[in-house]
Every structure is written in structure tokens, then in C-alpha cells.
Amino acid sequence: MSDPKYTAYAPAAPYFDLVRGALGDLVDGEHFFDAVSNEVVYEVLYDIGGWPRVIRGRDDLMAGFRGYVDAIALRSADQLIVHQTDGGHVVVIEYEVHGTILATSVKYDNRFCSIIRIENRKIAHWRDYMDSLAAWNALTASAR
Image (cartoon, rainbow, N blue to C red; front, side, top):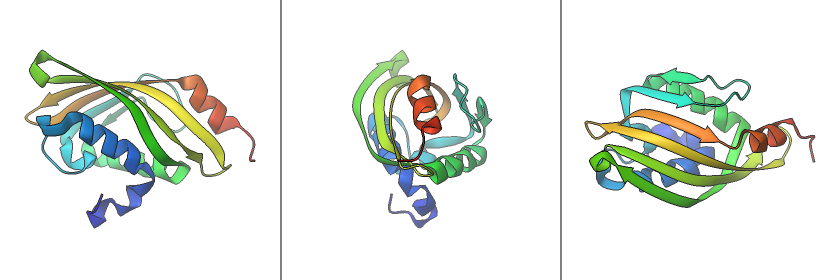
């Protein structure tokens, strides 16, 4: 994440690096946000306070992640499993993230499954599933 325009997103670097590595040469762009189309649809199939169910457009996705990195700092992302379908136009990734809720210093560990559609060598659509209970427990836990 050497591009200075992404410095503010450093707390999510493990996630961005994992995703970018998972997609390899299927997409163009060095950073996750460079690999996202301007018209991306980023859909989450869970309700977590403050995060919208659907984000449309790269600029709004970047704004959403600003809120994320203000709340959570990741120390790692791992356990990656990659499934390619439709000739590499659809990629399913399973992974885990590990970090800290900044307001409380509570440990945050979560599992995800993301379905990514690629068009014109950019991420066009993202559908995300996660362990909502793990997120809820971390976000509602008392400070330690």
C-alpha cells in the first residue's frame, strides 16, 4: 500500500492485500481500490450498524471503508481459499480477518465468504457474507 492516496486506509491493509492477491492477474490495479470499477456494486448480506447493505460506486465504497478503518484496525487476514468460476469472471473467496475494535480495544476475529464478479478486468460486483455474531460480539463488548 505504497500509494499515498491510500495511507488513510492502512488499518485495513491486510484485507486489501489478501483480496488483491486472491484476484491476481484477473484484475488490473495495484491496490484494491484500483481494481474496483467506478460503478461497482458492493453488497453485504448482513446488518451491522452504520454499514449500508448496498454501496454503489467506487467513491462511496472508499468513503465506507474510511468509516471501517476509523473503527477497526486489522493485524492480519488469512485462511484464504479461492474458487474461480465462469472462466475467471466470478471468484469466490473465503477468508478470515483479525484485528481490534479501536474504541474498546476488544479483539476482533471474523470469517467471510465473498462472491466477486469481474468485468473488463475490474471488480464490478461484490457480495459479502460474514459471521454476523462474531462482529456483533466484538462491536458490543465492553472495553478491556
